[in-house]
Image (tube, rainbow, N blue to C red; front, side):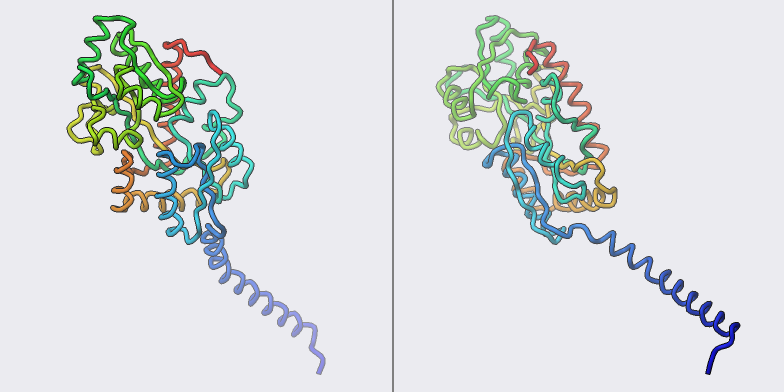
Length: 333
C-alpha cells in the first residue's frame, strides 16, 4: 500500500531523530575510547648515553614499571653522542604521539650552554612530562691523602695556588663544571685534570695522583665501601639520603649547590591528555617503595614532578651553567 506524502515525511523525520539520538548516545563512548587509546603500541624510551651507566640503569628500572602501568612494553634505546644530539634527533623524527620518550638531563642544559649552536632546542621542541630522579656529585679523595674534609682542600688550595689538582671525567661534563663552580665560589686556584672515563679517574685518585675527585656515587660506591677513597662532601645543599653523615659542600664553600637530574620529555605537539597520562603513571611509579630503594642504591632520589617544575629546572640550569662556562673561560664548541 503506497505511503502518502505526509506519512513519508513523518517516517523520515522519525528516522532522522533516531539517528541523531543514536549519534548523541555514542559520542561520549567514542570520546572516551579516543582518550584511552594511549598507549596502543610499545613505547620507546631514548637514552642519550651508552648502556651500563646511571642514566641507563635508572631508565631500565623505571621503564619496566612504567610499561606495567601503561599496559605496553617500554623499550630502552641507547643512542649516545655528543650533546645528546643523535638521541634528540631520533625523538624529533618520531610522531608526536607519546610513543617515543626522551630522557633529557642536566647535561642537556649544559649542552645548550656549551655549544655555539645546538641543532635542537630542548625548551621549544620538547614538552616536559616529569622528573625521574635527582642526584648530587661527591667530592672524594684517596684514602692516603691528608684531607679529611672539603675545608681541608680549600685551605691547602689557598696556601698553594695552582698546585692542588682536582680530577673529573672529560672537560665540559657536569662533573667538570661542578669543579669549576667550586673553584669560583671558593676563590681558589685549583688545577683541573680531565680523564677519559671514571676508571682512570678512580685509579689516579686512589694512587693520590690527584688531590680530589668529583664524581657521582654509583661508579665509586664499591671503592668507597672498601675504604680506598673517602667522601669529603656532597654537592647538594642538604645532606644526601644515599650518603648519611657526609656534609654538604655548602658548609665549606658558601652558596654551593649542584643537583643533577634526569627527566622525561616528549616531542612538542604531543596531545595534552597523553602528557597527563604519562605524568600520572611516572609519578605513581616513582613513588613505589621498591623503585625508590633500587634508585637510592644508585645514589638517585626517586622523585617525580609536574611538567612546569621540570621545565623551570631546565631553563634555570641553562642560565646557571652558561654563567659557569663564561667565568671559567671554557671555549664553546
